[in-house]
Image: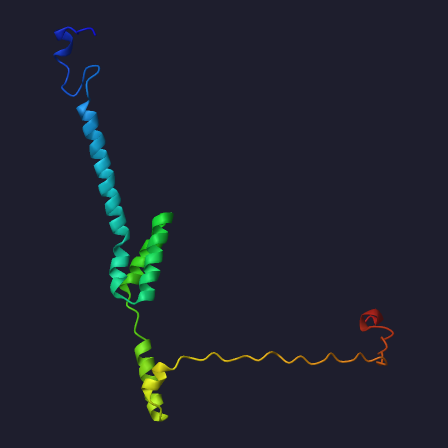
Length: 158
């Protein structure tokens, strides 16, 4: 390998390397970019999980809908789904089941049944009998035939 004259290389900045030497600036930039890609990707995924975290304390169906919307927005890059999931996570749906169960227990008490029996009973599906098929009617051989009118109103010019 040929040595260069010192007058040619004295004014060169330190990040420029000679032939066959390791470029530390390049290695540092590559490591920095890889770390930044991982950090930004992590922040991106954390941001997409915000609606799911908010909806975590709601009912199960609402949380699943929010999770599906967040997942769709993640794969399609359509931010409308993420915004809908975020808005749905902030909305608290009222509890309709508790008052309905209370009404059912009260009606059971009024009817003289024990409400505990109602919880033990499983709903029974109604047995649907096979439909009864009637025999096909016999064709009528001597059916009267109506005559067609001789002329219609349109043909008469009315």
